[in-house]
Image (cartoon, rainbow, N blue to C red; front, side, top):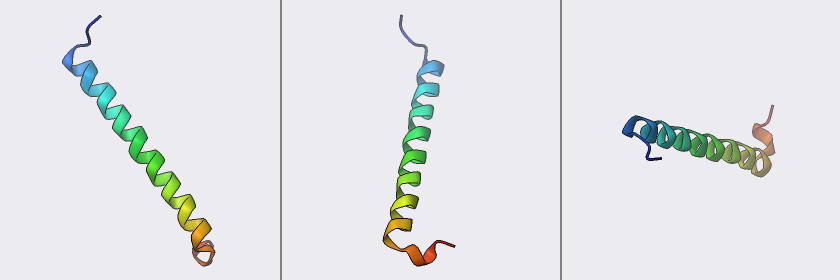
Length: 40
């Protein structure tokens, strides 16, 4: 079954959202590991 353009845009947007959020979480954890003084 072919996806319609709005379904394709929805899946693309969700994929981008998950990718950006996971990169952000990894970056936060890496910052905490490399610079423990910032952790409060």
